[in-house]
Image (cartoon, rainbow over all chains, first blue to last red; front, side, top):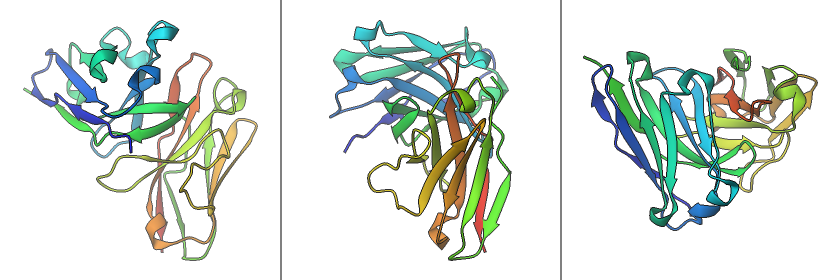
Length: 120
Length: 110
């Protein structure tokens, strides 16, 4: 069974930065498109972005609200996905999930999520 | 890319059928057969219930079905059970090569 485990969250001041990680052990990580999705407290799901496989150029796509501020990367040697988040705002407070594409827009499985709180 | 439009709440009694709609545009729902539906119970990660408009992943009950007409996709749950009470989100691929979610629908089983 594929498991995704996020880490790196916590309390950050507005304007700060954070790097989230998503470990994917026991999974053919290098062949997978990987995504980040977040959910603000009591709110709905928001897709943040995706990174394709290295053989597909490692191309990234981002949701318009976070483009330029968030960066997705991957290290296939470590089976790990990253999300670099900069210039954090209070509205970035959310549970951040990593998930993989089984097919286009077929997101499965999902990690358990990692909480990022932006507050002074 | 604006969020897809879903009703905020839907309810039904055990054994009944309900349908949740998801309305987008020709640049997302209407333009591609890449609509998926996710179930989320409180405190849990989302779980895919339907992908590519109408396909069920292995292990998902056949009480769940999906369809699409024009710019609107639908999720139907038949034979409602108490365990179906959850939040449901639709999602679509878009012409910008991005994904977009709906605002979510809270299903209450009366």
